[in-house]
Length: 447
Image (cartoon, rainbow, N blue to C red; front, side):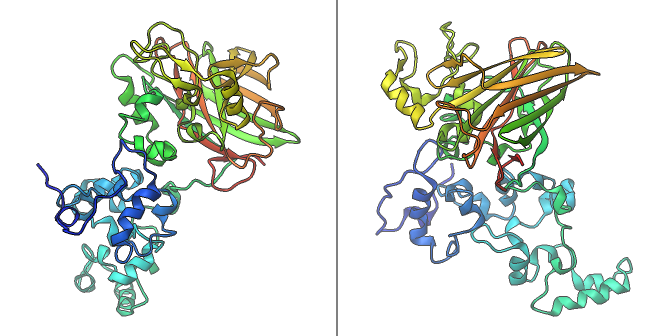
């Protein structure tokens, strides 16, 4: 059994913190970090304000385990296992030599987790120690496989203002284009991988899911799971599900006072429908979890399904969820009206597919699906050569009680595809995606 670290348990003057740490607690990252900074703000974390991880709203315990001796992220042999939970592209190791990954230098030999230093700045401070662990300049000078020109160039390393990155930019993890940025650069169009979600409902995500605490604190699912969609679909599907993921292409454009969306994917003619669900920044739960915020354990096919045929809904609409021996208690209409006024709702667009046509319906998601008498969206669809193409148009300003795309700085959306070859499983879904009419740090933009 691992024992708590001595520094965190044996100080005779220490007072138990008023903040609880760990995945089941709801203290914000700032509240947790303020406790750590009382001691570490003068040493390891003295440049934490404005650091890369601080701006991503990470807490110290996201990476550090304070209850064991030998914190894994502090040990060279195990540090990589912690860092690559989020930085998945680096799982292949230095120079993409995965078979030698266990011999790689620790990530912190080039990267500073506690401030804004670039790898070049870190390597200037330690004289490129991460590279020198394998590449010995003295030995290389006498190595016949190293060209005389390279041997001559390597002499500049005697200068204090030079690191290996002066010449070898991008060599550690491949080219910059080959490594996905942790902060997305907005594009008008890109490919999305939809995955089989199994019974991943909102209740599980906010409690038993290992990432429940960051999610409750406002982190988006992509912070940990970007690029893992196909693997997640495989893990959640189990045996008997052939297609665990499907790829779509989606693009956005502004056409006057309308938003135009083009979606295409390879699939059979009997795919049933494709849906988009939207929320703006006022709906915090939806901003974090996207469509999963409207998917619950008491809905059809989920873990607590009791045959009630529950619609999609948001937790904010409930005073009490349905459980065995406990009925659901929905907020009264006055309270629901206040939630709508505050923007605490989602908007669903559902396109029912036909080979050369489409019908579309829209709804507000709060206590249930409230279908609109007149759709907010127009749509067309066609299927040819094994490929679906769907076009949608919506007024930027949708009117009272609907989302305003013209003024919202950032919106969140999710995509769900329902196919005839998905009996029981029903659909494939996307991770929550961010959108704006022109910002730079969202997944998508429209111009």
